[in-house]
Length: 565
Image (cartoon, rainbow, N blue to C red):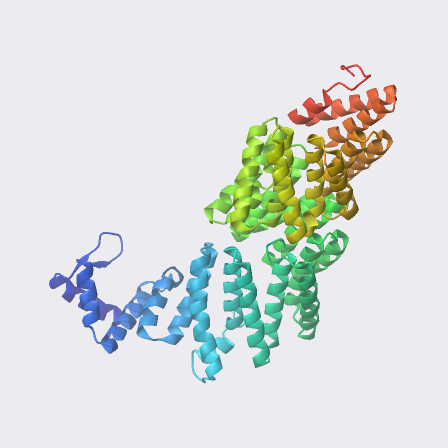
């Protein structure tokens, strides 16, 4: 039998002697046509049958040359075997090429390769063929026991999500579910349900809490009926995410800890890392910052070991939030920068927007308002490009308040209004946050009726355990409004509640604000001694924190109180 590599080498040597091709410079043997027209003419002169044979020969030669590195050349192999008309090889190498592209976060390329593989696999299955590639499509499984067809759909779906193509991803999973339903393949239906639930459960333009709950309920029932414990762990993990982002952290903890036990028992390291990362979002809002920090640190080590850059960037962003809350602003900025660097290295705009979503506040605390504005503007630009709901609602509202506090009232009001409208229409969990910041902008502009309407609505819809920041902005806005209305008793009570929330959640940042508001309220009531004591506590907290913004705030003299406190 002729060796494909020897046959190809002989053919190339003949073309070289005819001066149609030349050896290319480089460590590996390669040839180039001397002119594009020569290549086109030579290629078109080949009969279709001969052309296919040449492509097959090239493919076989590549397989022989790069036997241990086939994935590196999978895209090229898929091309040659597509030209050769070998569907089994197209399926094999398009699948490999999709996996390779996904690993380096090349979303568009991954979608293209997976789609080509799916066309072959589905066509074979629908035709009911009894020979490869039909058997491969039905029987070939991954190391985790996932059918190839499911793996291809899930791979394409992940790539679509990575590229921010959320509706296309949902359609992809619906197609998988319909295919599984027609063939009576319950495992395919389950995989599709879990994937759709994850999109519905998390913050993105397709977020839908009701659809998430419905899909999760059906998925859990099906997973248990199929005795698929791995799938059950994934369902519980997504239930944790859904409860966290819907403001039910205690339910999230219950689901997350159950998922963690199952995941650890099955040795699922990546799934364990996802669960740990998600538990951070549940522990912190209920006042367990220590546990939040522990699970985040453990998850980060796993992401580093697994080489998952996407989730490593997310982990650094969340670490930045904890550092900001603790008053470690330089470290918070460094963690945000690292998250941004990683996300940028994989061209993940969502991750870049995420990394910049809150870092502006760290610059503000350091006394750098211009850099704070620049960071928030950058986050908003990236958020608009990626459809990041937390940025389009929360960061936009914060930027509006910051502009107004720096004297750009109309710009601030416009941004705050846009943020509140967006949250109301698109992402309700952040509506109280945006309304509170809108109310604070109105207060800065002296529009008391408008401030009262916005702040009261923010208080009415606030879920104290629904978000880290919303209770802070609502608490500040409520106390500031009560002082402006001449209701110091209410102002002090609201500021006291805010201080308790901050201490419970491990927030050192904003404690000087809560103490200062209490001092102002006490002074307004004529309680001079209490006002002096609270002012002293506010200044001491600001000094220990090292927040330039807080030091300026608490250094402002109060009426009837000595400026030195």
